[in-house]
Length: 273
Image 1: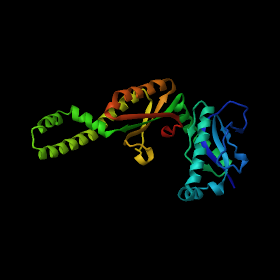
Image 2: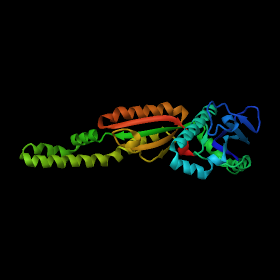
Image 3: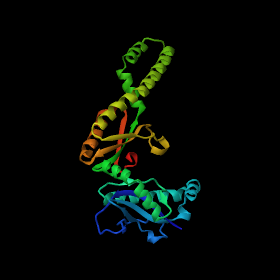
Image 4: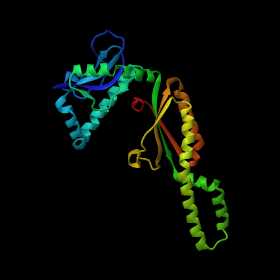
């Protein structure tokens, strides 16, 4: 049996009006054995569903769950194709797409149309809210050693202890140095949230919305410095340069105390739909 795999929803592209149109996407879809891997547009009123036909046997919910635990390479390949289709659909619709999560499948055309009718107003509202905006990703890392060094320079208590340590016996000096290092570590960790509040306040002045996501472990980031912020910002297209400029300013101002800013995009607006 064949089902319909839904990649996303976009505004109707005003071309020759047919119920289903081939979308100019130069990539193999998820199931190449059906319709030669063609990705199509299925219209409803003034919105379109980006779809392709797939085998329900291979892409059914139980089979996808099994693949997710037993065949990660298959899942990775299909997920990459899913993202590529959305990316190209964004380019074809002026960046305006409501992306669906991987594995959104309807058993037939009729059930997809029913869903489009049911959620039409919701989709319209989301598309209107995304009009002229794009999602930008921002990740912030912290070199704690540099931040601790800054704390040692700026903390009156630590500076006083560093002056007093010179007149103490060697053994006592060692233990006091350890206490100072621990104090600097605690203050550095406690100060990160204050710095982040300052950073985000400046970025939110330029952005329309902000969504904070889970921090990623070093194993995933492949960086030595820990991630201290992971978020997405919805930014008006005419303000993207200003937004990027603010990130560059923050980097220049705070890199000396160990903060690293990483920005990328535009991305499909998963965080704002």
